[in-house]
Length: 427
Image (cartoon, rainbow, N blue to C red; front, side, top):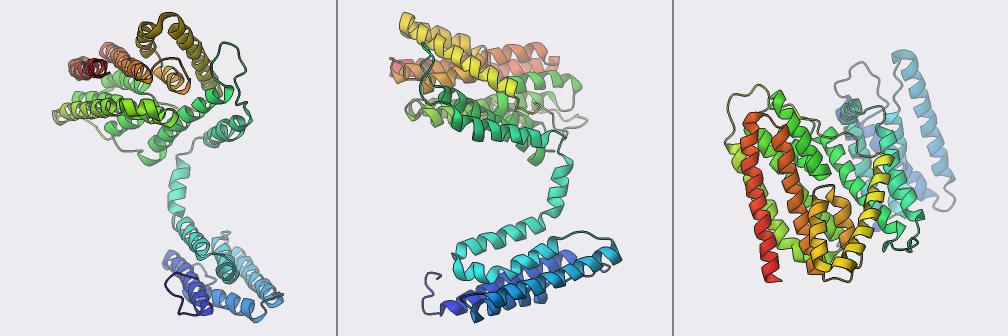
């Protein structure tokens, strides 16, 4: 029963809902076929409504056995079969969407009467969306590469099959982490990379170079920055737009890394929140300042850059897992033998490579060291990674972009150093 309508008979409410849902599906069919003068329709608004009402009547007449309801379903199915046969013979059309929607409409009576109303609403909304998004699905399918569903299967295997089967206990001596923790990190990184890939490929397909930096930064700011720096020589955008896009990739690095840290260690995330928030906005402002000074003479700024390929490869996942385990050993060895100073040096060195395995290991593993020190190491690793990106992009970029990148990364580096000095002073 719908809350607030207790004074109305449940039978009346159920009848109204069945009629309304059936009419909605019929109206959707009317809208879709209103311009198709040649195609013979099985029915639209009134026909679908009558199908729903017929199902309701036959269901309540015989509430125990439901033989009449099943008989009505057989009759409806036969009529639909005759219609489909004629449609194939006369018009050479083979779509069965309208037939399936008609059968779903006939099922509304038992659905509304026996199930919660929110389930009925969910089914109606789903049917309407699927029916209306036909053209969208066609456009999306045109962008699918031949291995797209293989990629989806890989992610399902990585996240849904392998992860639950992996032991949750520590099984390797001197490695202070379980296989489950290692593979969970692989799943989280792969999931974020895959999401960025899907958004870049299917949602923001023609969104311009700035979105390329944003989405690429969710995947890998280093890889995105390097590829964009190489692309600057193609002059598909102004130097200011290229520089702003590269800086935006770094801004998204702060966002991505903070989300990863927050997932695995809320305490360290709490320490880092004000610093990462400040660095994120400083980097955004830097990108904005570079962008608003863009040149006017540009040939084409609408073409999106392909900053990364499909990220889901088992080889990449295995390499990430091995690097993660390697950093676990290095972190443990460094902390036990050299303490805080050793971790400081290691965090800087790790920042000059792929920082994700280092940071994830740092926040997942229980070390005999204060969490504020781990937060400091994470902050320093991001600064070192920015230095690396600044050097890479300055070497690879076109000459007009070099000066802009030098300015942008200098501002980011100064902000990073200030954050490190501040966290040292306060803690």
